Image (cartoon, rainbow, N blue to C red; front, side):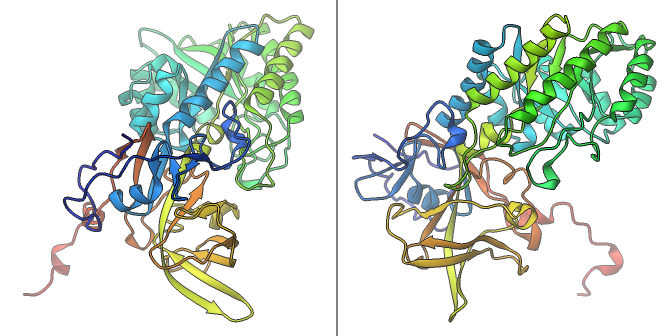
Amino acid sequence: MVSTSAPDSAPSSFAGGEAPPEAVEGLEPFEPGVDAISPNRNLAPITTTVDQEGSLVVGGCRLEDLARTYGTPLYVLDEATLRATCRAYRQALETFYPGPSLALYASKANSSLALTALVASEGLGLDAVSAGELLTALQGGMPPERIVLHGNNKSEQELELALAHQVTVVLDNWQDVEILSRIAPGRRSPVRLLVRFTPGIECHTHEYIRTGHLDSKFGFDPDQLEPVLRHLAGCRWAWLDGLHAHIGSQIFELDPHRDLAGVMADALGLARSLGHPCSDLNVGGGLGIRYVASDDPPTIEEWVRTVAEAVATACDERGLSLPRLLCEPGRSLVATAGVTLYTVGSRKEIPGIRTYVSIDGGMSDNPRPITYQSRYTAVLADQPLAAADGSFTVAGKHCESGDVLLPDIALPQPTTGAVLAVFATGAYNASMASNYNRIPRPATVLVHGGEAEVVQRREQPEELLRYDLLPPHLQPIT
């Protein structure tokens, strides 16, 4: 029997006493040629199918049933896709890199207790960039020795938290060094460190998500690398585990990662010549995913093989013993596992120009289109394979003209009440969500084997007032 688990509290649109969804039968693949080994090359989660009624199913759960049971907007995460991606990274590293290795989940992509527990169970580590992400990782069961703390403006409190749990700290600038020099001495063991620097490598991606070129807020400039390494050599509180660099995000090219290996191997040689053990080399992440049909990212195996072989070759050419190879997949690990469900509402036709179709979410649950001009693929959940009747602009409900989720997308006629499924929303949707217009954040359900479990509950309107204070002189006069 394939069903959805009952939520803690069903939305008002869910009829009380309604029978559980029927078994999903007669499933057919939704997407031809699914790459189950490298999910980043698919448009939809690897379990996405169509039932005998023509409705879309993910993880054995009908998406229309999920929308009715849990309300919309709704984030849906497919556990099988998440695990497949974790294993793809882990196994490719074991296959292609002759030394030790560890993939760290870049939790900024989507941070929750459930995701932390899942990636930890698959043997991955995690990178955090705030006290909130760090606490989520620790409470989600990620071993502290598999966590690194990033950030270009870490507070003293964040660094204290990292030190209290013996989490590796990524030095991003001289302020990090200054704060640690005050709070780290006198502790039982030295602070484990990575030094991040900008390698000066450009790649073809959005300017906001390029982080490896010289004009970046992240990391030490190349000409500051030797001074900081020399300084740390005289700090008894510091133990330099290795080096870190990251060249950007949503990258389809492989050559920049080959170039990065040589730059990092040179830096590794410099650090070791100054007496640092430097056992780790962290090459960051950046592998892209398929958001629309025309996208053609490399496979996870191709990316890992390129990085692994380039690092091994660069170290061999310089006579360096192999470091432990670390990488930080974020988007490529979680994005394709996610689907966001919306309910279609109003419609506005402008003859000869366009037809707007509005949904019950938008920029508060997915700010990427208005921020990065990002594109997505979407279907109607009850007729995902139906031929398009026209072109529609799917608009959000927020008070912004730019709140357009899907401009000019081909769909069958979207009627009021229809469920729209938007693919590849597992990364940077929930994590960048806001309460713009005081709209509550959506719930998240994890689906697997026909069961759905709430892993982040839906925010309620009254909860948006929990931090508001009304000064006495503004109290209503009664």
